[in-house]
Length: 91
Image (cartoon, rainbow, N blue to C red; front, side, top):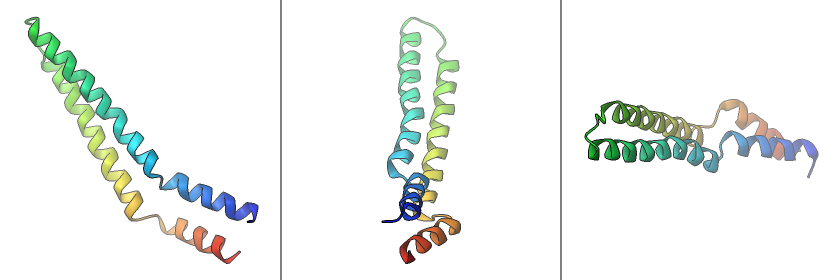
């Protein structure tokens, strides 16, 4: 396998990696879980959990955006990537 083809394949996997998408979605979801636990603790101590819940909602929105972007990248790779992959197959 030529070095150009290996580079093209590596770029292709980097551009549309399921693992990358999952990690991108998991990070804000982890933050949501932490914020919800903080809100629970605040509520149990009689404190206002609203700011923490608002932060959790923002992180949840980030997770949805990351999921939609990742899904779009996986389902509809950019045309430039298709040309690189086709060129790699021909070499």
